[in-house]
Length: 437
Image 1 (spheres, rainbow, N blue to C red):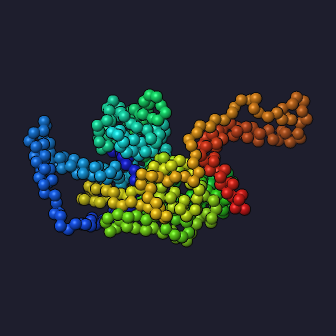
Image 2 (tube, rainbow, N blue to C red):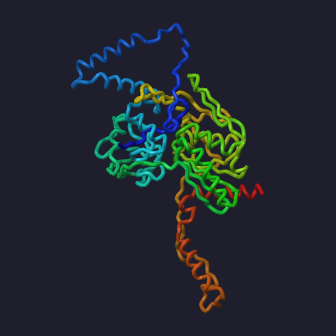
Image 3 (cartoon, rainbow, N blue to C red):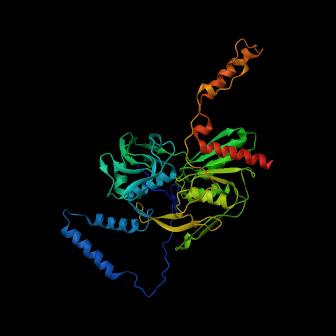
């Protein structure tokens, strides 16, 4: 079974944490007890339309299909993130939250009748094929997307791993639509990656927030510190194109750097939706400088982390404005096989900011730029060893191999060319470290 991840969002208690379900009660406050529980006149209209479809539609339609369509319509009319999950979709949601699923590897929403790419997931077929955040998918193979529901589009995008799907895409800055062929695969998302940028300066990339992301982050930082002699001078936390995920994971990641105070709070109408999450006394970096990279593909749980660290003055947020998803979805099981995923709360940063439709504004904004290295030999400075008949250094032969290794390494693209934003984050970390000393 192949799965194309349809939605991105924040999943909170009362939902899937890994593959574990916590059931919450659906208790809504009735502000006006004088109103009837059900709008009888509207229900009569619904019943009449139901009967007309049964008797007059050009083809016979099963009652089950009509009722499921009605439920989907009720939820999809609320906001882009509320939906009904049938047996297959409920199973897929659990698989995606645990970190392994099948499909193309992109997070999508619906915009103006087209499927909009929120972000491709790292190391997935879509990312490798060149799909980018903000792309509008207008055709799936030869089938136009206009007029489809998101569920209809998802059904077409599902398929057997190893099969191809041709995406026709409109991209900002391109004069004509692009055609990108993507081969479906089983997606195994590695939530946390790490590396040393330079001695003393570490890098951690979080691609999505899963149930084990907080634990994996702590393991990654511990390994980086061990690799560097027990401490780090600074760390870059990369949340670019991270579409979100599990709320508890976002709290754990924030808590790894904040010693006290509020991390995030949520407010809604059901009793369990009002929650506050506080930090515990532990900063894994012991106050060392922290830079967080974000962009327009950073959504939901990513924005919780960026907002908390920004409000606590614990990190410098660098990049472009984030996506702006400040709502919480709760998965409410209806049976063992079906569920409703419904928006039940808004979340707020420690200072009380709602990010909904606004996003996180970086402390340092970096416009997307293209950097290229200068390869013209005329720009290479002249040195003593380049002069004819220069005196030979006694160690020159011993250094020949080292020089060749260095030359080979120099052929690799420098960081400012391969990832300009990351190079700027590293430079900022170095400056902050100097000032701190």
